[in-house]
Each structure stands twice: as structure tokens, then as C-alpha cells.
Length: 126
Length: 482
Image (cartoon, helix red, strand yellow):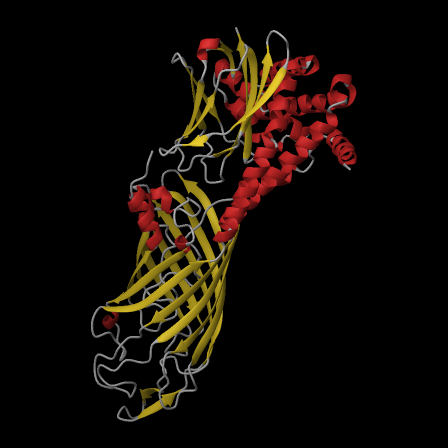
């Protein structure tokens, strides 16, 4: 899993499963909606969808795991976060992407002017 | 119906692009100190594709943003206005989630001032904190005994009442009041949270479709590149304020261009109705999220208190009570309501009191009623201290009979060996100003209060009183899981 730009990654077969861990330094972990993934088969162009929810852990984190698709795919998804009003404006939702071969990438979703904030990600199959 | 809505939204969106929901992101770009930071801030803005669609197709976002910014938190620790020491004419409905203590000196409506220590606990909050070793579990809606966390208990102890020259003085440092406090708005919060979660889940597929659209549609790829160029140019020169204005203009122009594309570009025109549907869903989800915040900050609480009055230290000097005799206990029922329009918070209290027992000459059990209201202004935040608040409150009420239940008699000026009966029943009016200074992110506050009253409980003469307090909320002192 190689970072190729802002929220853009190159991925390979042996990167899966990819785990996304969400955490925050704020008092409360923001609400995370189930994430709808679009998988596009790089050979046929066929599109499949998968909806995966974050699972809350005991340590005020939440984890989502992307299991390997049947064929090499490009993946597009949007993470949807609801920041409560008590969330300080300078406390983002922190995301850690970890591939199966332990490659890591970090990202942050910042609170904006609306309670619900989206962050869009693209993973290109190599 | 959906297509009519889409046309309406498209039409109104075409009038002018509303950029108010991007203010934080735009400010971030304008304030970026280096080209790298600027580029990153622009990345964040341009990545908000669903917000771009919503802003382009939903004309009422500005209202949502304005409401959302006004939402803040508020709570108060301290004794009611009938205590010997109090700084609060009007009570706020929030108790500390776990444990709080206040020390207050100087009365509000009592003739004899003193010092009062007020302790407050939420038993379920303590239980959840200790069981899970996490103070966050004490918060409302945290998934631990949420029903029971609505119940709080306070106990007040009047200290050093006997310093005042009064025939009604405590024999010893004395327990004076217990209150049971019940938050009655909490049940709605859970339902509202579930609704928000469901709406967010419902729009997740459409949100990813928008992400795909921006990745695949050539017209939108070009739009992104153009918008980036405009933003970079706008953010590269001038003073902070000039840059902010230039970035706002550039982003407004970019959004206008986006709206135009939706109407003119054939590859986008066909999917505009589905984008408008998403914009509508997102608007609804954000409205629900704001309603959830309002529910968490609109408060109604009920309180029931039991007051034990002072006891006479000496035998009757003027005929009130004998040494050691205590006037009848008083029960009070109180409703507290608060609405948060932060930076303005409106609070209202209504209460009525009854004597536990009647003595000869008393006109039944009913003692008095009171209604009061306060406007609290949340002042500017002091970093690491918190936000100070300034309140203006008023109270009106009526004493149905003698405040202690007994007839009240005083020595005659002309002949101190003789006494005359004073009728203390009647109306009471008061006005109060209260400044609460925060420290330690509001874990510790210092309230200062000045009150004008047309009378006090045992004196039918107007009075101006000052009082000061020291409150501690221990919620943040308990361990929290990181």
C-alpha cells in the first residue's frame, strides 16, 4: 500500500486485509457511519458494492477491515463522520491504515462547519 | 415529487453559491503559512465533494451552520437562593456527571447571611466511572445506566450561621438541605441519536457514488484542477484578511462554476436529480444532528428538596422560639428549564414550598411560591481556563404565611421588654447579577453575585447583598481511558 497523493493509495493483492483504525484525542470518539465501498474489477470494469461498519473497541477506537476482493479491484469509498458540538475544532478524527504486510498510512479528518463531514478515498490496484 | 424538488434546488442553487459551510476550510487555506500547508488545506477543501454537492444544491445551509456554531455546553454547581450562602438566584439544570462541591458565602434571599457547603453526586455516574475505570462512562448517553444517570442528589451544610446577630442561629454546623434532581430530557437523546445514525447510514451509498463521480467524470476533474488553481492564486498574496476575502471569492466562483456545470454538462445533467436527492438527505441528516445537539442542551429537570431550618441557640429573646426548638421542615418542588441559544442561555425556575407540619396559628401547610428567570451570556474563552459567564436574573414570589411557620415578633423600640408581632407574609422581588469566572477548563469556577431584593425572608426592607463562591466539578479529575 503506497500513498500516491491526498487520500489516494496504490494497493496490491498482498495488502489485504487492510485495517482502518479511527481514534481521537477529543473526549468522545465522533460517530462513524457504515462505509459503502465500490470495488471496480480492473480487468472487466464490473462494479460491486460492499457496506462495512466500524466496530467500536474498548479503548475508545473503532476499526474497519477491508477484506480482499475476489479479483484485483480499484476501490473508492467515503468515510462519514459526525463530530459532536463538544468536539474541539482542532481535534481531528485520526485514521491509521494498516495493510496485511504492515505498511502504514495516516490520515486525519478535520471538524468543519457542518456536523457531518465526508472524506473520500481512492485505492488503485497495481 | 423528487424531480420537482431537484429542479427547485437546482434553481435556487443557481442564484448564488453559499460558501458559509466552508468557512473553516477557507480560513485554513488563507492562514496557511507555507505553500505545502496551503496545498494541503486546498486538498482538504476539494476533497469535501459531498459538501460541494450539498452546497450547490441546498440553499439553506447557512442557517444550519449558524445554528450549529451557537451550540455549546453549560452547567452550574451551587446552592439554591434560600441557603445561607448562595450565589444563584436561578438554578441551572445541569449537575456534575460524577461529583461536585461548592463553597458559597453570603446569602441571596436570607436575612442572615452565612456560608454553605453544597455537595452533589450522581450515584450512577460514580458507579459507571468506577466499574469501567473511565469517567467518560458517566456522561449522558454513554451506554452505562443511562436512565439512572438522570438522577442526582445534593446535600447542603450551612456553616457559621451563628456569626450573624440573629435570634435564629444554628446550634452547630448543620445539615440544612437535601435535594433530589431528575433530568427529564434524556430519553429523547437516544432516539435522536439513533435517527441520525440511520440517516447517515442511508446516505453512505450515495456519498460513495459522489466520490466515484468526482474520480471518473472528466468535467469534474477539470473543475477540480481549475478550482485548485484559483484557490492557490487567491491564497498566495496579501494580508491575512485580504487572502481570506480572495479565497472566499475564488471558492464562490468555483462553486458557481460547479452549479453551472450541473446544468450545462450533459454527463452531469442526467444525474443531477440523484445529486439533489443526496443533497436533501445530507441536509436532513445534518438537521437531525443539530437537533440532537439541541436535545443534549435543552434541559428540563425536576427537583424535590427537603430543608431543615436553623434552630434557636438561645431561649426566646423576642418570642420566636425556645432554645433548641426548630421551626417546621420545608419541602420544595421545583421545575428547571433551560434553552441554549449560546452565547445566550435562558433559564427559568418555578417552585412551591410546603411546611411538613402545622403549628397553631399557621394557615395550613403551603408556605410560598417563586418563579424566576435568568439570561446568561457566555463570554469570550480564556485559553485553558474556559468561558466566563455573566447572568442577569429576576425573581418574583409570594410568602403565603410567616416564613418560619411561627408568628414573628420583635422588641418594641419604645419599650424593649415588650414585643410586637410582625406580619412577614407578602410578595418578594429580587434582581441578581452573577459573574462566574472559570479556571482549569471550568473544573473550578468562582461565582460572584450581587442581589437587590425588595425584602429578605425575615425582614420587609429592601437589601443589596453580595456573595462569592468556589465550585469544583470533579468529573475531569476521575480517570479516563485514552
